[in-house]
Length: 207
Image (cartoon, rainbow, N blue to C red):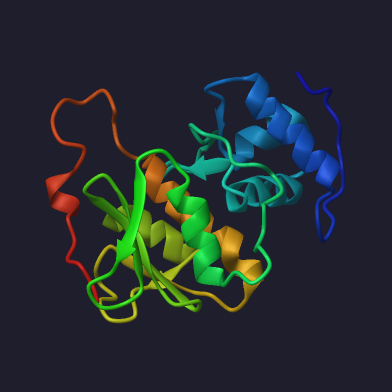
């Protein structure tokens, strides 16, 4: 267990602190914490905890459930992204990263761009290098929009779909983290029998 240590919030968190919290999750399989629990667990201030957990969320190492708890993804993604290869576009980078996950395939979207699927389920699609659209249950969509991780879908703002406008390469990790969230689906109760879908949360498919 990490030794209790207080710290003052700073504008950015150190890589060493992020790595230490990452190792806490790696060393405690099944660990799930809210920000408040992390404050008590690691004796850090709330703002620092939020920044560390947000960094691990953005890197794809953690996912956050609708209950606000952070947990490690089933298949960890390196803390430092492999980044964009020379001569590779933003879209190509995201497709390369996401399609490398077990069971994920990439193909053309019916209205242009690239669609990423896990089996028969669409994880989302990319319209070039500047826009990603992803489907989520409405409650998850509301949290993503409220926390500023995504925006309401540009055409169907009242659906479960969200849009993420990509400004530059610095947004790549954020987009990949959202694809990872949809891939992991931590809101689904895996103990329930039947299809991995909640009928009352189905949404239409945008263009």
